[in-house]
Amino acid sequence: MSSASHHPFRFGVEMMEPFAGMTWAESARELEALGYSTLFAPDHFDEGFGPLTAMAAAAAATTELTVATAVFAADFRHPAVLARELASIDVLSEGRLEVGLGAGYQVDDYRSSGIAMDPPKVRVDRLIEYVAVLRGLFAAGPFTYKGEHFQIDALDGTPHPFTPGGPPIFVAGGGPRMLRFAARCADIVGVNPALPTSERRAEARRDGVAARVDEKFALIREAAGERYGELELHGWLQAAVITDDGRAAATEIGAALGALDADDVLESPFVLVGSVAEIAARLLERRDRWGYSYYTVQQPAAREFAAVLAALE
Image (cartoon, rainbow, N blue to C red; front, side):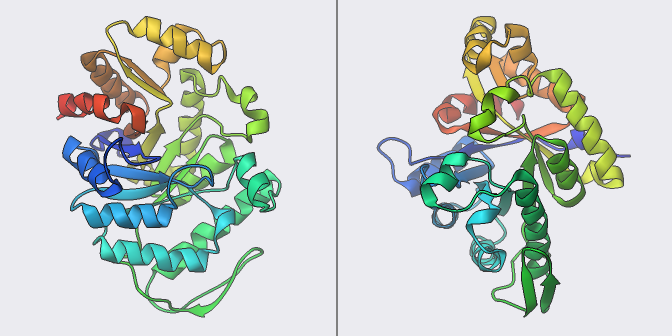
């Protein structure tokens, strides 16, 4: 079986707003110039621009930058409606689109909007159908689907995607069921700490330590089978800090995350602290150990972290 660790590195930035003193278009062009692969737009009601508009505007302002969501909540839009909007962005950007999808987890999104928040099993069931519907609508010809949550009757919408078969599907997860589904059905698999509802967030504080991540990858390898080597594996960086005293920074981050010790923080694939050389070495080690090759950093760290991208070239 081929190893997913052979994928080249690439990096994205989750953008909540334009950089200070810049327009959204200028900010997208700066990410492109810094060497980032992807601009990620969030899909929470209290963060950033609407993701479809944000992605379309960023793609229009650039020539190489990929645009993606972090991530569409399946409960917020019908898949037939979203498929058409995504196909349009894929056509207009000439294939520079990735489709991040999730089951929805943030309690405040549901509470503030009045959208019903079903139990986790129902939300994941709906997401599984959602991906099947998007795949079917991205394919050529009329598509029919009869599921528990969605019914499609011979729909052959326009436009058809620029990317044959549709843009890559990116599914992230922390729990066993989501990871197994992503391993079987996604093109890009985000291997994250568990993302419970905000009411239970404290229970997942240790889910990002290295030993837990080993368990997640064993599950993914088993679920993916022969397609494992085709998967691109993604990590969401909770912190990325360039410093000459990585242990001190790790101690501070561990306290903020909930009494994790510095060694746990330094070994976690969801935190990168140290000098540029130390961070580059850790990225290589983590690709060898787990296969992570695609990372997203948060907007405040984007400019400083670009030095790591340059060091890896």
